[in-house]
Length: 189
Length: 429
Image (cartoon, rainbow over all chains, first blue to last red; front, side, top):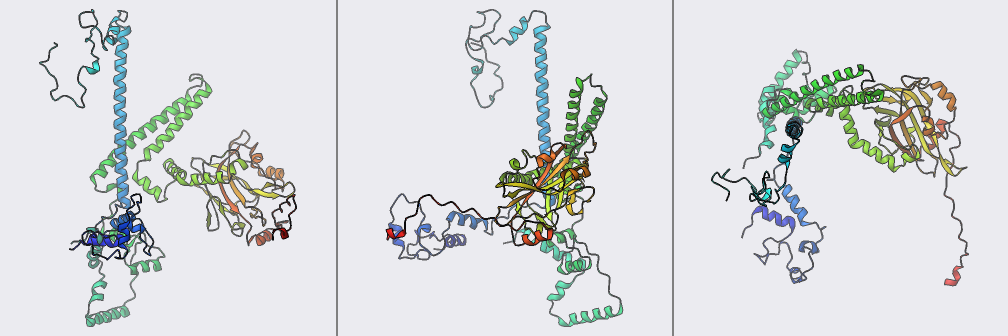
C-alpha cells in the first residue's frame, strides 16, 4: 500500500513506523533484530517512548518538538502575520480610536447612572421632608416589612404583604425573559 | 498549483516596471543574437565619442532598486540606500500618498474620532489655563490660606500637564516621529514618550546594577533617578556596571544627560570611586575623580563632554584616570549628576566655583558625596557607574597621569598556622 507524501516525511522525521502494524515485515526504520526487544517489554510503568529508549547513534529529541518543527516549516503552513510599518501604524490608530470610544461610552453610561441615582435620591428626600406629613408617606414607600413572609393582604391595614413569598421567588428564576412578555389573563387565586 | 500571491508579487512588479524605466538590460543579457548586441555596442561607442558623458542620474536613496544604481549612489553622493531593495522597488511604483490621507475607510473614521477627542482636550486646556490665571489673582484669604492656595494651584498645573500629554498621545504621526528619533524634546508629549521608554528597560537595568553593587547604602542613602545618563569614552559606549579597560577610561568621559522635565537648570557632575584601599586602617575609602559644577542642562541640550568643559567656570577637580592596584578587588566608578536647586542666595542655583576650590583644596581622597551635598541644596537626578580593574595598561596610564604610590601589589594574608602540631607521615606508612 502507498502512503501519502506527508505521512512518509513524518515517518522519516520522527523515525517511527507509522504503518508498522499494517506491514509487519517493514524494516525501514527499526532493524528486525532489535524489534523483539521493544515488543517484549511489558512493564506498564515506563512511559519512555520507543524512539527515545532505542539506542541509535544520534542525539535523541522529543518527538513533539519534531512534530511542531515539521508543521511550522511545512510549505503549506501560512506565513506568520507581519505588518509593515505603515500598516502597523494604521492598525494602532484604529485600535486607539476604538479604545477611546469604549472609554467614552463607559464614561457617559456612568454619568447617566449617577444622574438617575441622584434624581431618585432627591425625590425620596423631598418625600421624607417636604410633604409635611412627618415622613409617613416616605416610611410606607421604603418599608420592606412583610416582603420576606407575613400576613396576607387585608389582614393588616395599610401594609401590602404577599403571604410569605419572598419577592425573589415570586417567579421561577430563569436565565432569560419569558417568551410571552406579560400574561394578561392571570388573576390571583 | 498556483504559488501564493505574496511570493511573486514584488518580482512581477519589478518586471512590469522595467520597460518603463528604459533599462533593457534583462532582455539584452538573455538574448542569443550576438550580432545585434555588437551593433548596440558600436552605436554606444560612437555616441560617447561625439558627446560629453551624460550627468549622473538623479538618484534617490528611497527608490534606488538595482545594485548598479545603489553602487552609483554610494559613489556619487556617498549615501546609503534606505530600507530593503524590495521596499525601494515597491516605493517606485506607488503614488506617494501622505500617511494621513491614506484612503482606508476605517483608518479615516478612526482619525476623525481621534481628532474630535484632541479638539475637546485643547478646549479643556484653554479652560484650565483660564482657571489657573483666575485662581492666581484671588487673594489667599479667600481660598483658605496660603498653603491651600498653593496646593490647589500645583494640582491644577499638574492636571494641565496631564491634559497636554493626553491631547497628543493618540497621534500616529507623533508616534512615528518619536520612533524615528525625530521628536522635539521641547514638546511635553515627546518628553513623556522618551521618559516612558527609558523607564521601560534602561532605568530598570540601572536600578538593578545600583542595588547589585550596593551603591545605595555605600554612597547615598536613597536614589531615585529621574534623568537618563549615558556614558562613553570616545566611540565606546559603556553599559551601567561594565568593566572598562584603564586605557579606554584614561581620557575624560563624555556624558549625555537627558532630563524629562521642561526647564533649564544647572547640574554638578561628580565622579567618585568608593573602593580605594586604605592599608593603614585596613579598610576602604573614597576618592573623587572628577568634579564640575554649574553645567547648564535642558531637555534639548543634553551632551556634556567632560573634556570640553570650561576649566575656570565649571571644573573643581579635573579628570583623574581610574586605576586599581594589582591584587585589589575591582573599583566601582560612580558618576553622579546633581541638580542644583534654587536657594535664597542664588536664584538660578549657581554655586561659587572659586569658594568651592578653596574649600576643597587639592584633596581628592576621602571625598564624601553626603558631605559635599550637605549645605548646598543639591539632589541627585541621574547616575551612571562602571568598574575598573588592574590590567595591562594600568602601569602606563598611571605613569602618564603622574600618580605616585601606585606600584603596590596586594596579596592575601597567609592564614595562621593551626595550633596543633602535625604528626610526621612516617607513622602512617
